[in-house]
Each structure stands twice: as C-alpha cells, then as structure tokens.
Length: 72
Image (cartoon, rainbow, N blue to C red; front, side, top):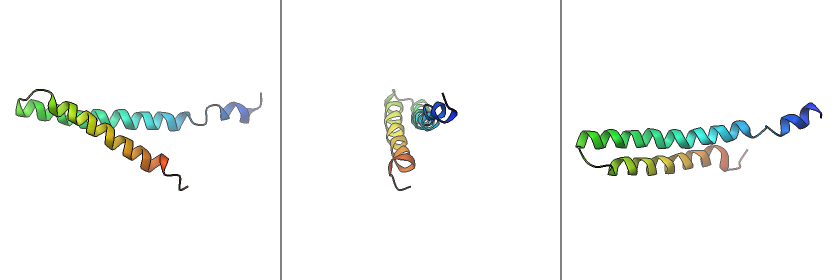
C-alpha cells in the first residue's frame, strides 16, 4: 500500500474532531453559563437547558461558517 493511499483514509479525521470539539465546547460553555445563572438566581434547571440548546445552535452556526459555506 502506498503512503498517499494510506493518508487518504485519515484525511478528514482532523476536521471531524474539530467539528466535534466545537459542538461539545459550545454546549458546555453556554450550558455552563446557564448553570451558573440558575445557581445565582436559585431557579430550577431552565437556564441550563436553554444554555445547552443555544450553545448547540451557535456551535452549529460556527461550524457552518467555518466548514460549510463552500467558498474556498
């Protein structure tokens, strides 16, 4: 097996991990802010859930801007 064919199998792995970490990081960051807001205001878990959803939505938008527009 030649070296170029072997590297082709792994060529998208870095992009996949970057997308995954952006999605998880967005949910963790904004969800964490929602958790802190819940703790500060002594409410239930509404802001945490809202933060996770908003974090996922913003992370999806960031991934779209970075990888999905197709204007290379």
